[in-house]
Each structure stands twice: as structure tokens, then as C-alpha cells.
Image 1 (cartoon, protein in one colour):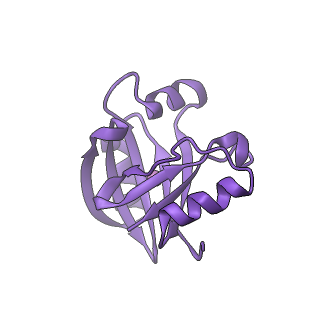
Image 2 (cartoon, protein in one colour):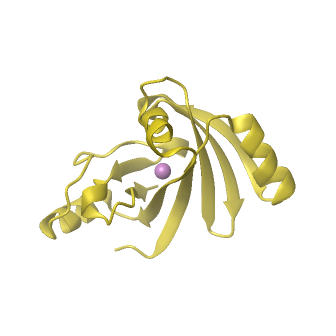
Length: 132
Ligand code: CO
């Protein structure tokens, strides 16, 4: 069951420039930056209420986020919903006809497990499920 947004992912070419905006201009709480090698990104995380904002900087030209920026430019990349049981939620949406990019969960930031739906199944909004 989905009861809250976990985080919003924003694709950026350079973390340094945008960290200043979110931390110093907006005044959000900066929680730190980590590399998620599985997704070939560095992730800077900010807390606002129950939601985190994740800035995603590609670490390789062929990473999915690099391809996203090449195609769409920087900006809103995905929305992620928190789930308690990722396998059960995947099975639920697949039964409703959703095509998963990740039918099998993979590692996300901060020790989470994640799975992306294909945007053609979610109104062209890249949609992620996060457990943990
Ligand atoms: Co995410």
C-alpha cells in the first residue's frame, strides 16, 4: 500500500551548483552526498518534512541520468513512493498491467531497495517504489 511520497529525484549536471540552491537559498536540511554505483549517480539528499529531495548527478556519460539530461535537460526526474513490502507492491502493480523497468528490486540510496516502473505505464512520469 502506498501512503506517502518517499523522495523526489531531480537530475542535475553539477551537484555543487544545485546543492547551494537547495541548502542555502531554499534552506532545506542537507543530509549529505553518496554515490550509488548501481545507478551511476552521486546523490545529494535534503530533508523537507517527511519527504527527501534527491539531486542526481551522473558519474558516467552512459548512466541513465546522463541520458535523461541529454534528452530532456536538467530538472524533475522521478517521484518515489514509500512501500513497506516492495515485492508485494510490484506484484500488485504488475497485476494491474504496469510494465516494470525493475521487476526485481535493486539497491537504492541510504540502504533502501527500489524498483522503477516504465514511464509508458505511469503517464510518462518516471515512478519509483522505495522500501526501507
Ligand atoms: Co529515487
